[in-house]
Length: 259
Image (cartoon, rainbow, N blue to C red; front, side, top):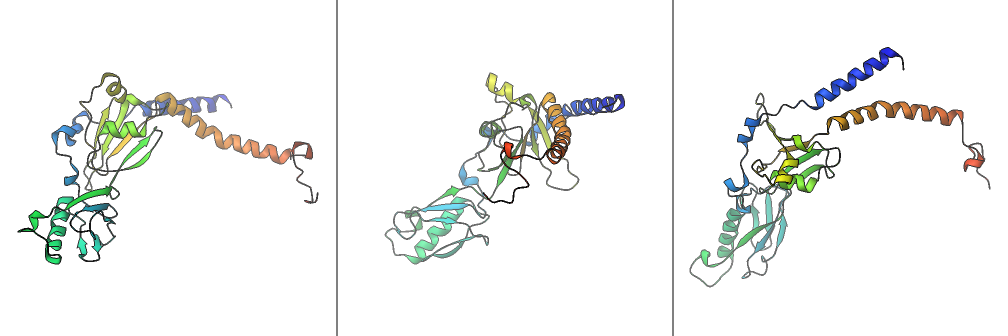
């Protein structure tokens, strides 16, 4: 590599190093998020959608009790005696009320009104909503959103790896409308763990993104690897063509295949 190419390569690495430390986060954007203790985050507030799964608890009706149903793409579940029930867009308590009314209209049960018959609808599987943890973590990708997912929980499950810049974790709430900027703030995860400081442990919402960036050195190393790998592969391929393996190396490319 001549001097001009070496200079250009160093300049590229320097630029990458500088860019690695530049984030578009705004400390004030944390106001768009709420803390876990500031809101009722029980499952009753969760809005059901396909393909969530629900489980019905009603000991008085054997045909319904412990029935587990996955919400169909049309937003409904169905029971042999009760028929189809529209559940998409409703909270579990709302679905329980509908089922209780259908039970009262279908079965003759003791009691003065439907309120005497307990129907409990529980979420058996959260599957319709996700948030994302990306970047330098051991377990990247989408995570099922339960309505009770905090930033600290998300990072603990994803587990930042050795290349992670734990002091500059980015929490992103994508914009819902065109022209609106996303809300982004920065968290020092290392400090959060070391000092037990959870003042920035926010409650995540559906679609939120938690990005764990690489450190500057890790970013440079990955760029060098990306630059060198195709060149190394090309040279290795050329070497194999110029020096085909012999029988001493395990096989002979000119063999007819007979033993």
